[in-house]
Image 1 (cartoon, rainbow, N blue to C red):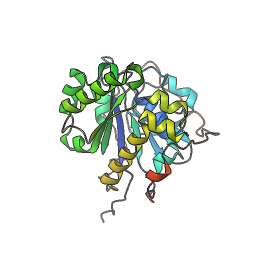
Image 2: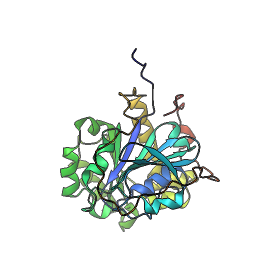
Image 3: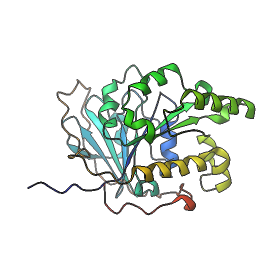
Length: 278
């Protein structure tokens, strides 16, 4: 007897080259400083955020999960870990899963580390810093990604506050939009630092570009709808013999207590949450 497919939330991957602002964006979206931004980029695999009671799970190369404490994140390695699953009762996770990917430009991070998780994503938010916006290496990699992602992705031009004049900001935005036409739904300028300085202030969100980004993200999630589970793709499977690793991470007590969510999604762009759990 064939099981009836279950619905799930759309999955949005945050991507870009090293230090492009992906983890800072995750912090803004989740409304709390929970993304492990300070963990060594060459070690940490994708961090997958879903709605649920606060906990952190490590998914090893056999597809098995084990609960870990936040303090254990510094010991996680992509050699023996497919992903880190973080469950939070954050507002944005009522609408979609958020996957914080490793930097694509890191020579010490094999592309397979993020590619095996990208296959499970429905859309992408690609971050490119305004000071070196849309480098040739980014364009080359984006062309190699599945074409289905192009119409279901947003390009964020981050670090706009690093450009000194409005003329420079307008010039960079216009160039990036011209060079990426047809590759993304929208290319949007944003200052994540400004947005995080006062994320509950509507004026700050508007001036930083975060307000417009969130509106476009909600539109993207609504366009994706509620995809059907595809043969258990939400579950991680064995990926073969693990690469050598210094030492396995020992399981630790599961709960991460005391996390207080902070709202970032403006009420006017909220939509009804998906009823099914991921």
